[in-house]
Amino acid sequence: MNIKFGASLLSWITPVWSPEAGKYAIEKTARAGFDLIEVLLPPSMEFDAQEVKKQLKDNKLEVVCSLNLPKEAHIAFYPEAAESLIRQAVDKASELETDFLGGVLHGGIGVFSGNPLTENEAEIIIQVWSHIADYAKEKGVNIGIEPINRYETYVCNTAENVLDLISKTGKDNLYLHLDTFHMNIEENNFYDPVVLAGKKLKHIHMTESHRGMLGEGTVNWDQLFAALKEIDFEGNLVLENFSSSVPGMQQMVSLWQKSPYDADTLAAGSLDFMKSRCL
Image 1 (cartoon, rainbow, N blue to C red):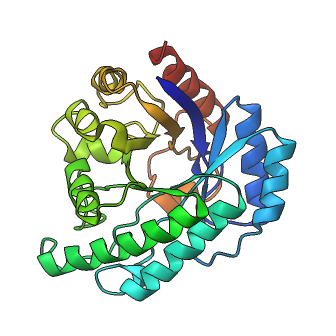
Image 2: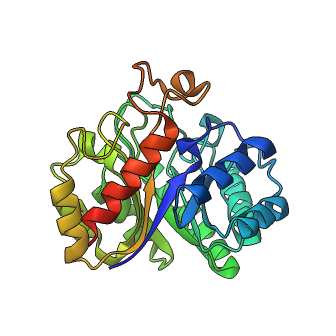
């Protein structure tokens, strides 16, 4: 396996970008010993890529980007707005000189039609993804699409949902981005989706069932790591656990229970856990 270990911005700050908060997250990620940081791009795209690039270089840290579509860019309803926003995110990733943009790129989080995904909606998504894939290829960027749970979207809940739509685009730079928190709700197990994806899997959010310390919840890590070894995984394992010690985090991500660990302890313990399982 060829793995890089990362931490999301959300390991240190709330999902509200500011230059000061971003710098803080970069410095904390580097000190904790991670290889890279996942920068969750703000939908406003008010993000100075050149300044962030300098901060990354100063801290000897690699970077990947992610974007979660907001409600006003739900692809099935607003395809032009969604395509425009994802193109801007690809531009930011390119400016940061990273080759990966992941995230919830199939629909706006929290948007529901009241019904399952229709064939017409799927066709709209396939068309937008195809346009984005071509644009991203010109910029040297691969796209990873993250399925999330039924309480946050009706569009893509499982690995199979995403892989099916990707296959219909015929594009080779679209990949799967998994998240163990959502897998724990939607998948039958942690082995089959990984093996199904094979080399189409490039990025995983490593998150415990309660968003706490890896290994202390109900995620079946034995199954996950067995599957990663089976496919000889090459990609990123990125910590996306939350601590209530981060000001404002409880309110932003509905983390109503107080965390037993502060952000530093949670990051250090979870990184050790991931590395020990990859030996």
